[in-house]
Length: 299
Image (tube, rainbow, N blue to C red; front, side):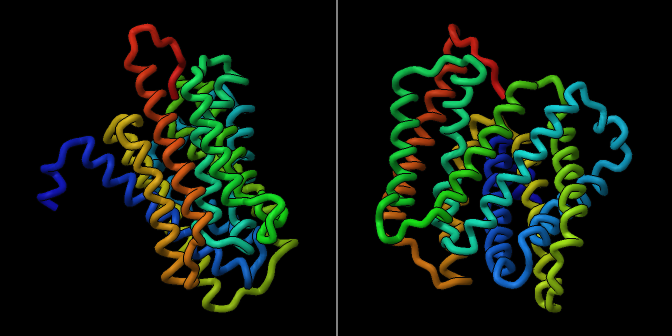
């Protein structure tokens, strides 16, 4: 399309990111639909099998090169963390709305900042600590421990956020030493291999519609992953990262369209607190990169 070629690199990156989170949130909606009919292992198998398939097709001539890694143990750890994050999130969708689960999972960016200070020794100032505390308060508003709406199942998306943060921190630890596509390939291989071993023992005969949705889910996940790759290839991470929060709006929209679920008042308030805190932490991260005295390792 001619109009697309006239866009700046940053605009293309933002458009790719918005497309990516839209596809991912639609994939989550399909997972929620499937969760009432087939086993969680089948959903995860379809998700990562789709990702692996598109990566193999796209990078077939370079596979041998991309599979070379100096950190095989970390690659395995990242794959396990990503699989666990997806398992926690899809488990949450059995009992929670898309918007509620997505909002709590959006804690991941601020947990990354906290984890970088604790595990990697990065400096975290008082203002960013306040942002982290605010995001945690936002999650508590949504989860509401002690309230009638609370159940331990409400903690699943929090587990997803923690695992996503662990995945990002292991990536940050490696830094720029390896191609990001290497991590994508390894996570696809590891997750698909693990689920291929588990799924025969958990297989629930799916209907024709469920089979079709499994294929659709794999395709949506693969396209979402590819769009995210294109986003970070087109523009700097600091320019496009805030637009990942559009996934919360998309999740709310899909929830209304497919499940007639409207987020309640406290979910909206908690989500706004999390997004505001996340954007503030991102802003502080960006300022530290700009500062000539900044010496923090960046992803």
